[in-house]
Length: 238
Ligand SMILES: [Zn+2]
Ligand SMILES: [Zn+2]
Image 1 (cartoon, protein in one colour):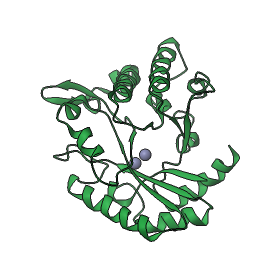
Image 2: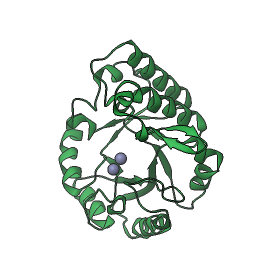
Image 3: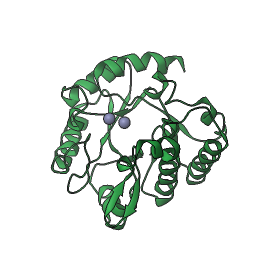
């Protein structure tokens, strides 16, 4: 069993336990693989809810040490991050891909870049605009991120509809664009166990569009030991 998509205390909104506690818990739950994908920082630290840029090296170094120490379970090292054209142009995703020991970039689009000079992001838009248009901004950014070639999997793709009401034709067309891009690039789409705990975040209408042959991965999105434990019960039932 693979426990995929685990965060650490460094992001500032996860339980304050050492990384090793997640490894021990995962092994105790019967996993033979654990994948850490904490929220990636950006140079200059322009965003909250993630480690500081200065912590990135320690994150990878600490996990590499734990990887060497644990032979009972395979410890994998990744980062979850948004795709922003501004940072792509600056070479940042290429830089991340070159970090020794970093095995995967998980595309998790929590906001989108809306202008380039100066860079501005969707969280600065009025609430009414976000309610109507956020899924288009996030979905379009997902497609561009998928096509950039820097990412290995797409986190909670159906969460782009978090502010939407009932499923409609515009949502259907955005969902199809994301799914088509992921299938073409061969990137797994993540069925997120955290999203499944909420009606608004997990969209059956999205998953009904995903072809059976498409690659998918179950993600825990665990920010605490309790979440890992609770989601392992649901995982076993899927
Ligand atoms: Zn988080
Ligand atoms: Zn996450």
